[in-house]
Image (cartoon, rainbow, N blue to C red; front, side):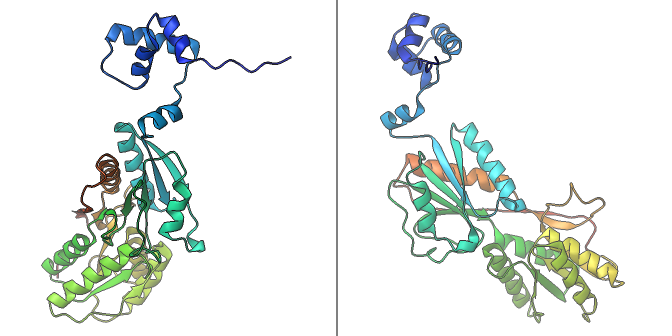
Length: 335
């Protein structure tokens, strides 16, 4: 006949260690008000008895779970994976755990629906990694008891946002092309509904306008190398094209392959710059000049912003952007 094992209590640990239950509680909560030798005795007793603190009870008592939900729609995207890595690393360093919540973008979710999913979870706040704007982005008001940070370039007056500095990305790339004598520069975009792409495209257009240069038709891609390859074939047959700004490195790589397949040399005939620096470890001899995006820093800023809102609910709403770094390799030539 089987019996359910008895749950080890705080009193059991106190008795085994020869201390009070209050001392065990202090050790469980990480208090510094316990002498090192006493703390060692309590930890040894916990280990020997198999004691596990009741975190739910502690959270109810303290009114805090030390947990953050991360809501995202595409875990396979390079930027999301690297951002998530930054989030989890920094959260652990700051004593927080992460609860991952996946939503299906095809179901056209709203921020209200996303937060509805997490409001009953044992979390103190939420980070939303948002690649596309949802229908209620500018109208949604977060619940007062939930700290919210959205990772997107689009600012909001209702919640904090964090992202890479898209304006700086485009201005840096375009100024580098101009510095190298290029004036006939084409843009290969990501999806039209991508927030990051929208801001990069606006930056490209603004730079061309500042130089009073004609703006060629935008070539729409979808972040994939295949769409970049098709763009490269088109651009190889485009008179006067000397440079291509591709909205990510996958498409930039495809552009290079398409140009070369059509008989063009890179960079001797056409120069190419990408964004994100995601291929250097996977594509040999890539030699692609690109804007490196610091996704880990974006994740770090998102966690710190969320924790700041948890601990200071009335703090001002912020919009934080992280600048990228131009990595100069061999895909741009002066003309």
